[in-house]
Length: 79
Figure: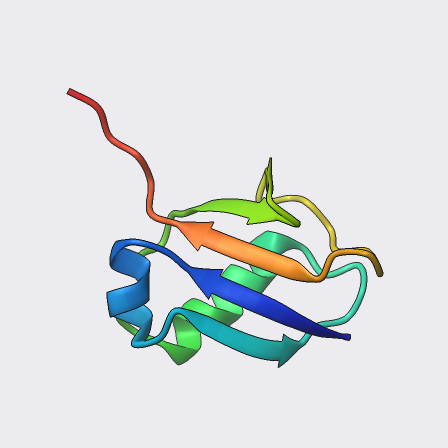
């Protein structure tokens, strides 16, 4: 299934784009998606936050048919 991948903040600059459309199967984990993306784009960090369909999810979340949008955010630090 074709899914929209969004990159925010510093990830947008590291990826060189704010949005991709890629074919991802149901059952694939967000962590696997991120590892595939970061191996293709060497400037991406190892750890990220993620939302699926505008709801935050764990990286262990497995995609289902209704998951059409995946957004990645850099980790948040506080002071």
